[in-house]
Length: 110
Image 1: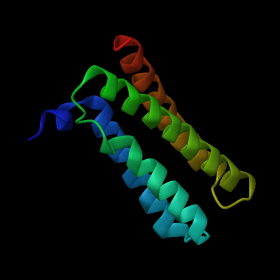
Image 2: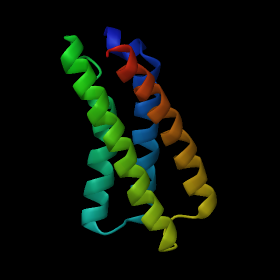
Image 3: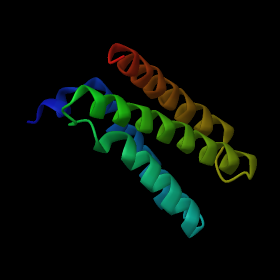
Image 4: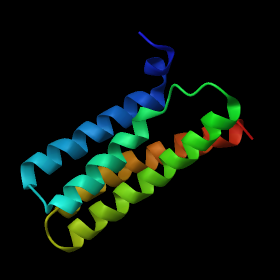
């Protein structure tokens, strides 16, 4: 097991991505929505193994931006009735937790 796989943020980001992917498979959104949500949710988890302090801070900042990107996409899908409000609330709560963890990690690297 790699060290980054032990990080709570990595574990939560991986679950969030898999949840997004399951949603994509279930509702089959337009290809650009599928691509945007799939890539953004994947990018949250992919860089947890960065080594230098500056690289890690940059990665965590980018990952936090990807969390916001996912929420924006899901919010629009909710407005369109493609995503139920209850489902959006679950995604939103998970995204909020990820955002808070990433924010704390960014601050710890400052």
